Length: 313
Image (cartoon, rainbow, N blue to C red):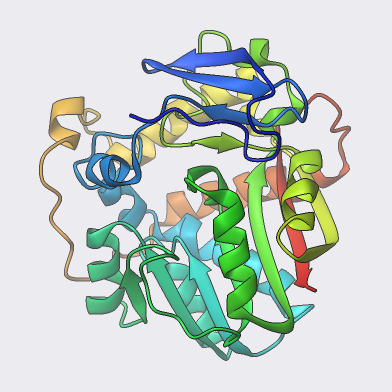
C-alpha cells in the first residue's frame, strides 16, 4: 500500500469522499479530483486482477463478446470522423475485440494490457497484436501512432499525468486521442453511500470534465470535443432491474459464481465464444438507452460517461 496526493494540487488537503471494500477515496479540496489513498502498488494490482480478486472477472470479459464488439464499433465510428486509417494504439486492450474490429476497419492496431491472460487470448485466439505490460514497460516507437484509444482505463492508471505524456509522445503531430471515462468527481460522495459502485480499489482515480481538461492541458493535448451521455441505467430502479437481468444472462440460468470460484486460476479459452441472441438484444437496448436517450435527457446531477476527443499539440 502507498499513500498519494492530488496529481494536480499536491498536498493542499483532502476531504473524505467515499469508502468501500476497505479502501478510502478522498476528494481534493482545491480541484475536486477523487482518488484512493492509501492504495495498492501497481504490482499488487496486477496480482489482484490475474488472481480474480477484484471485480475484473476475466472469464466474463472474454465471454461478453457481444458488448465488446458493440462498444468497439461505436468507438470506431467516432474515431473515423477524425482519423480514417493509420496506426492505432489501444491502452488496456483486454481480450482484444476492439483491436480485431479496428483491423477490419483498415487500421493497423496494437494493444497493451497489464493482464497476461487477456494478452494470450488476444494474440493466440484473435490473432491481433497485443503486448503484456504498461506504457512504461512496453517498447513503442515515439511518434508512430495516428490514434491512441482507451475506454474506462483512465481510472485504473496509477500515474495519469505520466501516462498521458507518454501517450502524447507516441502520437504523430496532430494525432488524436479518444477515450471514455466517468464523471464521478462531479457528483457528491453521498451519491454512493451504501454501494460498491466505484469499484475501489480497481478504480484509483475518478474525474469530471473540469479535471479532464486540467489533465489534457498539462500533458500537451487540446480537447476538441467532450460528449456526455447520462447513464440512465445507473439510476437506482433501472440499475437493480438490469443487474438481475445481467445475472440471468451471465449465468445462463445457473447459480452465480461464488467469490471462491472466481478466485480460482483462470484458464484462457482456445476459441472465440459464439454470439448469443438474447445477449445481443440486451446490448442493443442498453446501447440505445445509454447513447441515444442518454445524449438528450437532462444530465445535471446524473452519473454520466464522458467521451473525449483530443488532439496532440
